[in-house]
Length: 532
Image (tube, rainbow, N blue to C red; front, side, top):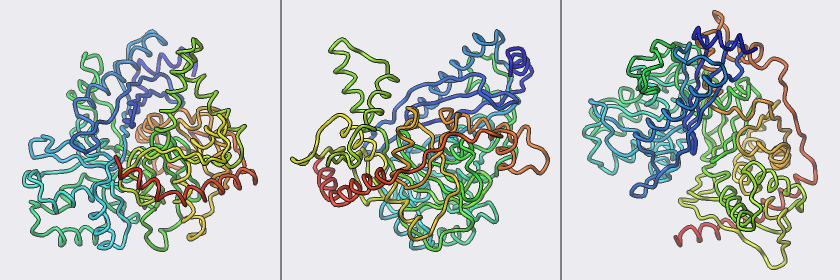
């Protein structure tokens, strides 16, 4: 879209806004009728450990989104010479799962419990057995069940529960509903009905009888909507929540809020059966769209859905680049002290590219990147740990390769279940997120780790905020009866097939050798985590 066209679209409100609340950044992306980003804004934030619980304050949610949206508005004015006063549609995305509990007045009863908490092992196991369906520790229902079993005082005042995306959407629109993909991280979904599984709801209510709930679980949960459905409009108070200066007008159509898994699928055009994507940032997860549900439940595999309700197998690992980022900061400090400071992008490119020169098996080095517990490998807590056997080869390339392999190892353990026990075949696996910002490196090493070709699109850096904007655009501009996958394939991505890297035999063999040592040393990591 040329400058004149972009200016006209902005002035006419022919735009869609996507907002994503990630683990470390809140991002806002504005797109026009050609679906390409027009402007963006961001705000950095961090979770906090509050009384042993990983959390974000709702005040930080509000101030953070306002900062990101203000940055976007400034960019619009600077680039196009017109103020951003109207939006055509709005989509909200955020970290999935977790537990936000409210009373009838909308007051938060306990600090937000995020996906990163691993305090619900007992409850998740009990519910998994009850349903015959894997319930991960981070799911909303596991946190609710824990609150019931622990007789937490707030349960007596509980009126409804939400996810972060659902909370922000409700604040913007007054509508208490989430997208089906987001809902599938709260409670199991019946893909045929695109709603919570009725039989499992009944089983939960019977199990929870006498534990203090004032209403059935279905009435505590938000409503469920699918991609393309209208989920309310931006209210006056919602507009002020985004823009307290009063410039932004209300009235924009809002699509169902989705989790980062759903917007990641959309942003990588991975909503069709047989496609998959890997999102690699603070956490790492792989999504594979299935022709049918798995043959049996696996504790390492989550069953969720696409934003349109199709079944998806999800391998979610709590930590990906946090340890790698910490080492990068250390190397950056050294360079700055030596008077040779590099920009963040230069530093990461240098470190990532060095990994390609390392030995295929990292020269015997081993690393665990666990900042938190990791259910896939059975750890309740984590402790970053670097191991260097005496006979290993400690070089920068081997060290950096070990860091990246560590970020991929737990994902591979989970994916092996799908490859080996469910005979999963993917026609396309798309990578996106911070791990892929440096060209080729993360893509090449992931292809070797998963022995599967990996594609990175030219739009891979746009992320979940762009995916949320595309869902908003789908709700606003879809043709009658047009499916989401058709909309994405024909109208958004078209000929954008991306760049694909095939796995190399020596890379896969090297990763397999690393993974063998990794599995053998898991008891060491568990002991280290228990010390702190």
